Image (cartoon, rainbow, N blue to C red; front, side):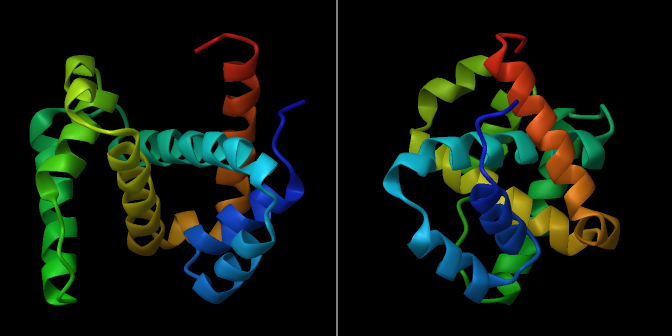
Length: 149
């Protein structure tokens, strides 16, 4: 059984589906000891959503096109966006692992948050079936905890 809790799942679900007020409320209530499990579940959801979105086509070109879409969204909203960091973390995740050396853990976490938020907003199938994606993420956490990375 994965070490994630229903509270972690609910907080991530609220965040991923854009219920920011609820996500913040749950975040404020999450004990410090639960943040490690939350980050693990978040990383797993990130991986599950990437797999769903890219369907095995995690080439530098497909990653660059995806990051460019996010960059345009952020520009239209007047929000600064470090496209190199997001592209670099995605490329590292896709197999160019040496790129992880260039990024802090905060860069990785913020990229995961950006990607989860964008993918759930881009694809109604994801937001409408978020529980199934969270189930897959919890299964992935269980595999990771068994050492099957």
